[in-house]
Image (cartoon, rainbow, N blue to C red; front, side, top):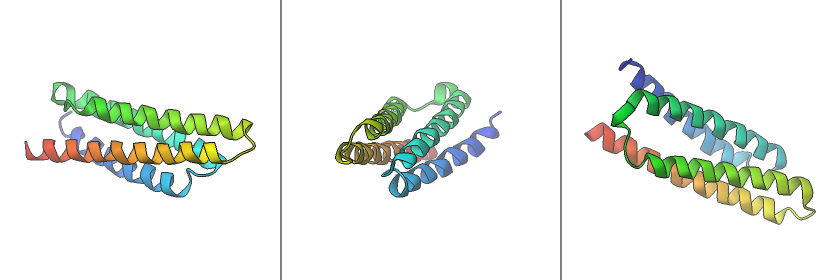
Length: 120
């Protein structure tokens, strides 16, 4: 079980890079927001598996990490829903920007947790 932790950790970090890249490239259009919701969901599941394997060794900052992911998902869901109903693209694009900023913050917290746990 302990040998699976580095593998899941690398999958989580690698997939985080994919999520951020897609947020930069795809998150600005309606279909891209749908893709972002799915990608964040998959990343969230990978994170749950990773946290379950860590058990009590899960860092305390994980709550900020999870909160950032949930809020980014809410921003993309709201942007998608408003994009379906709104005639102006300004609000959905603003929500996509908010989602991107939240993802960057979440990734920062995740990398910081990784650095702290790697040096412990």
